[in-house]
Image (tube, rainbow, N blue to C red; front, side):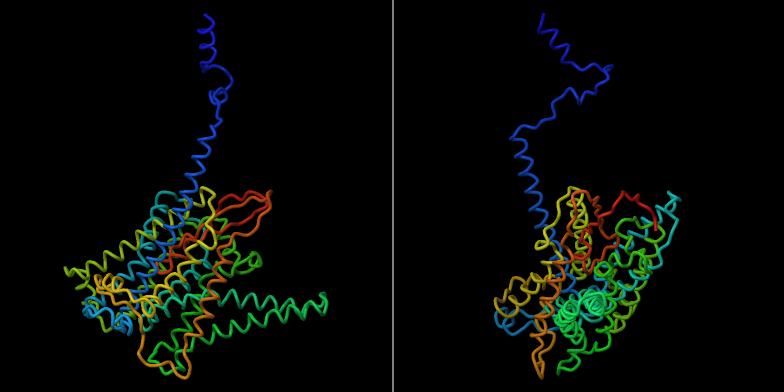
Length: 461
């Protein structure tokens, strides 16, 4: 009788004021807690590996396709070990490479245009607000990256293409030097502190001069590099276009205030539509210039798109796979942010991708030639780009300058992806860029964290 009474009391009465959850014990057993921790650790490690590998493969594919637009040497070590001939080249194959690069960069923007149109049609409230500053800066970024990949990369080898990613350092470094010089002339500070600040700007100024001089380095050497005027323009446009690296708190009341609010606000459908349309238009225009430079007509483009060649089909399939991988990487990075799993700075794709690929090219071309990599690239009619030119770089070897490029990028990438310190009472919000850059997917995986004094509702530009 007592047992029946206890069972009836244990049952939950729907008409009681307390909820069912309050009568049920929510405490997890120790083995459950350990299992959850192990699972979280496995997810954390697996996600890091997938992000680094995916971003590395994506960037490697872009570099291989871009450098194969023009014929390159495979390198003495690799040619001696791997006796197979380079893959056959034709206008159809080169056209397929350029079209594949266009797909990698612009398919995400085409999807964004369709999504923005659907939001505008189905939700009229999303149509309010246009940020011209965001549209302009994204157009500058698209112009710089497209010029870099379509016009500059075809004239270089793999390692030099990778090291040109140092362009993102120029504008942040210049702004830091300018702030140091401004502080050194503050009359309220002591003379010793002003001199110390002034002297501390000298190494950074020297590094900036080295980076800027690299823009015309190959033009003064005895090498067949013809993009003398395009390279400086490309570097400056790309560096300014990556405004996330130099926009800060000081811009919240300036002309670029909408860029500073970009992290705590959602991009409206109208702004997203115009951003994507501008990016596609600019990339297509530069793509047309690259076709003209390669002596490829519009008829060749349509022939390549309708071709049943296995080589052309493999290139287009590879481009579509890169687009899918980039999309999955974005989802994975957002998933980690939603689970409050911060990617380690030394394991972030922005930090690791460049050194890994640079090491791969140096080892495969000069130290440990790998015929497997050579044959794998040949399956897609791609040559492993070890040498951009056979002439000696007189009067000095430009390999010494690349050391500055690599170190500068590593230091900047670590500082860029490192999460700032927040107080326990701060309200921290996390955001990712709405715009995906297929050519540089590692920069689109950065999660930015901001601290706000009070909760800010998501508004529209």
